[in-house]
Length: 97
Image (cartoon, rainbow, N blue to C red; front, side):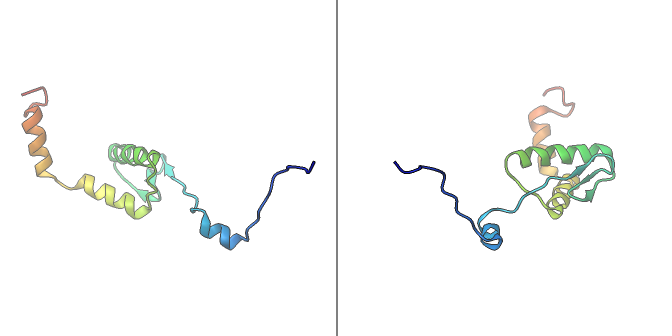
């Protein structure tokens, strides 16, 4: 009976690099308030952005520094249509209609 061991194939580094996705690192520095190297001055906004991005990273998103900058920009932009819809649904006092 022949030995039924494990067959191993090897690839040179270049081929392996092309076949496998690049490793992703999600880098958050709480002390410096940076996400992927982008600094957010306001501590509250830092945690708002970090929470949103963190949840998306858990779902598979691999954001770059530019992506974090874009997320921050969207959060900072006034969005009157969202505020209007929020008030229509929850009322002006946030305690109901």
